[in-house]
Image 1 (cartoon, rainbow, N blue to C red):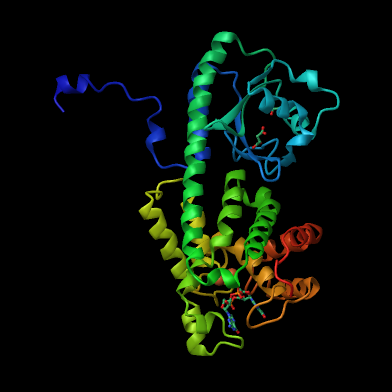
Image 2 (cartoon, rainbow, N blue to C red; image 1 turned 45 degrees about the vertical axis):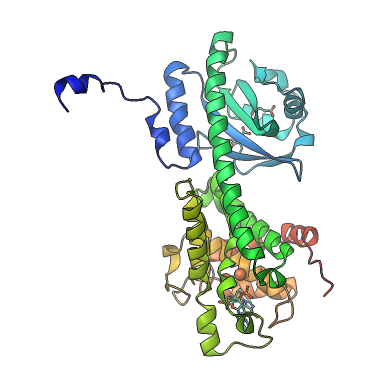
Length: 383
Ligand code: C2E
Ligand code: SIN
Ligand code: SIN
Ligand code: FE
Ligand code: FE
């Protein structure tokens, strides 16, 4: 560049980092730093998403990710949060200049925020094409920090963050729909029922939540593990019916073909990512790793790569346990369903050889929740 030309390029766009392919939590953290340059009293940004089907609100991501979060991996019925429901109903943001007004008798969520020393909050409801999708929280450790002028500027950041969230959710939804379509076009659905898909997802989330503090798994990662675990076997659509539906034991030749399914899953997911130009959204690797490595074993005896121990990504170790447990307790063309106790005993036996001990322990610690999941997502067909 000539000197003259260089003069034209002296300013670096303050938010240039948003052009990059980063997980939403990184973008949020970066925006938070920028916001703090002007509004130093904003100590935390957080997003919680609303799930209409279950009327629950779940924590999604926040700018203090990795630090001590007041409400990581938290889920609450919106009915139990009247002050948040009011925001949704009025379709207006809520300003609490001093959270002490909630000191007595509000629900868990507010108590946790206050317990971390936050004194004030500005809460924006988020909408996608008019439909409520969640909340954005601006929290401050100081009371009475928000003036009208400040709020006008914060609103702009709020809408920027809202667009980032919508973009991310749309990418995930597109990806899920495309992979689901691939599934539906085959006979695959006849074998893997919808309830199997739901159960696997919930088991995986249960394990991920249990491990979150010790493995530093963020809410956003937990959500992606939940969404993507059920896609691990999509590659089975490439396995011939005579193998996939064989009522008896597979011979060596057949099992060799069966063992190609994780790589096929990975190829299908990569093709979809490419076709929909989604290769850039934050956590694609969680999806890829679950697909490709869910049959790796801790002792290196698994496939396709024979990875060992923590060479296997944690999301893959988690979905392996969810998958094996549901396979054991479900009817397959080749086996009758096992009782939970038999399956728990098998998980114990497989821990440290095939399965990750921490993931197994996380399941075994939560047998009550496993029963709830099984009751909620029963197989439709009488067995
Ligand atoms: P799948 O049926 O979804 O089973 C997933 C995993 O659960 C299996 O991975 C295995 O680790 C565990 N699992 C399922 N059933 C049993 C069981 O009765 N005993 C024990 N110890 N573990 C069990 P794996 O073995 O790599 O198999 C991958 C896929 O290959 C299976 O997915 C299934 O679709 C197919 N497959 C495996 N063995 C047979 C078989 O004997 N006959 C037929 N037709 N298919 C089989
Ligand atoms: C979180 O801590 O991630 C939850 C966000 C909030 O509800 O404040
Ligand atoms: C609440 O009223 O529960 C929300 C408090 C906050 O996170 O700002
Ligand atoms: Fe599999
Ligand atoms: Fe499976």
